[in-house]
Image: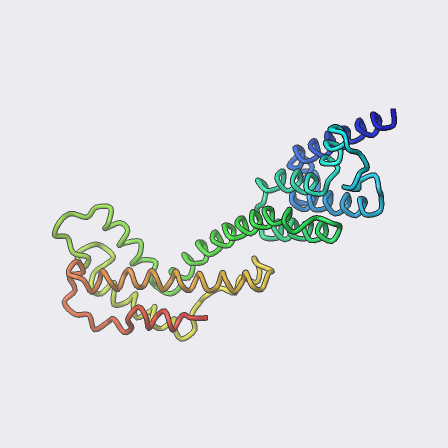
Length: 257
């Protein structure tokens, strides 16, 4: 009777846990906390409760098949997996990723094995990378606009869409000799103090900020290299290349952080 009651209690716990996970978005809508922060709170509270209560212990005494099922249901991996899997589709900011990493850290201190936490850590890190890349994409566009290369990049993309054999870059609107000279002059002037963002307002983690700044600088350097290579090729069609003050490697060095 006791074992049956314990099994029923475990089933009720699992049902509640899954229901909470399924309703994260609804709960977040009515709360100042995000889905990830709500999941973090659940993981932390239950993990710490397990430490204080033998009822949640993974070494539940029992050797039968049903006992093993109950033990798995009450385990930390089940708790963490259920909550993180429910929260991952709703991660929108790096703060959300930090909340789930914090929850994993607490769960690890409460007994979650490193081998169990590894897959969720990797999943969170991959999501953070995607978020950082999105920030970098947006900021790269802004930097190119400020430093003068965005107009050339846009015009070159348009040219690629209408290119026919024999067309030269210098004859395309926005890519004339004067257009390129003005843009390059503005870009070279910006290299004295490159407008690479600090990301302090959007990325709290110092290491991720460093990665984002480095990626932004690299992408700006890549755009310059792409423009430089086309301008100096036969496809460029420019009579005088004296306006090119730096080669791509020099620009990359000047943009290095």
